[in-house]
Amino acid sequence: MKQVQLTEDQYEMLQEIVNLAMGQAGHDLAIILKSFVDLSVPEILVVEAEHVADKILQESVFSEKEHVNLFRQTFYNTAFVEGEAIVLFDNETRQQFSEILGLSDKMDAVEEIDFMLELTNLMVGACLNNISTQLFSRAMTFSSPELLSENSQLGNIAYDIFKRRNLKWDYTLLSKITFKLKESSFKSDLLIFISQEAINAVGEALDKLLAEYE
Amino acid sequence: MLFDSIHFEMLKYFDIFVISLFKGNNTMAFSILLVDDSKLIRKGIAKELSNILACETLNLTEAVNGKEALEHLFTSSFDLVLLDLTMPEKNGYEVLEALKEKGIRANIIVLTADIQPEAEKIVKKLGALAYIKKERPLNMKPLQDILTRIGIL
Image 1 (cartoon, rainbow over the protein chains, first blue to last red):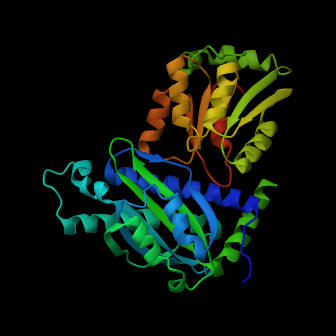
Image 2: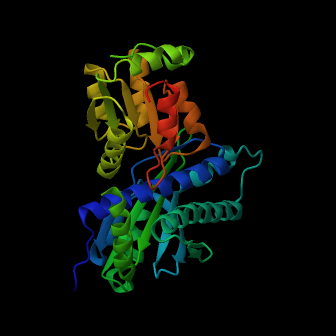
């Protein structure tokens, strides 16, 4: 199995790119939720398939015991970069949507799911399009977001989805971005998995951008 | 220190005075605290600053997070502070809040990827002179414009 890794400089460059992309997603989220979004430093790392579930549990804003709702959306661009994004919302966040949006009636379960699908589409779209434009000067194409799991304990679902035998790759480039609202307990994690085959293309694009700083 | 105790709101009425102060003292040292968790960004800004600032000596101090920035700001004075917002340890908002709480005035320009509509209002309310959106490739024009406006260039 060939070792896949980015250099320290490539990580630095990618960190800044994801930072700008997160800023765009935070902006879009702030507008739709009419709230101020607390942004924290994104986590970026190349992870071996064997360790993905553990890494997710380690990096997530949610604890292993918390019940979460997971949404999935795949993406690709014509520079042969492909991957998938998973967005997590906990049940407490889900129950607050009506209040955050200032709705007089509480959303029902179907409306909550629809709204989380909409937020997934917004966060994934803003982030990935921004990353793709910065790295490859082209936009991403996305699948429709889908509900992967509802009201599941994060520890159980992480090990279930990321079982080694379910994964077709040995390595992934994982970025984790957490969005929180200042005035409520809204919390969401955006996990971006770039495919193993695309890591080299990302590395080459990063090297070109790094040359700007020489 | 050239104008560390003068708030920007007052400073903007004294453009001519400040410009003449700088232009008449182009051999003096100019101190900047550059706060950003990205080594790459610090390197890029440092290179650009040394190109655009005409003063003889540029004393550049770097901090990699808000905690380090506050350690510098509590013990030293700087002519200018360039502050990122999204950082580990303490973020830029927390730096501005801590300075306001302690009554420490500094000429702070926020340089950030946090582009949500409220961000600019909040940092200015907390005492920042100006707010600049980060771009890639690094675009120094907005910073140059502000430095010109406050009489540094």
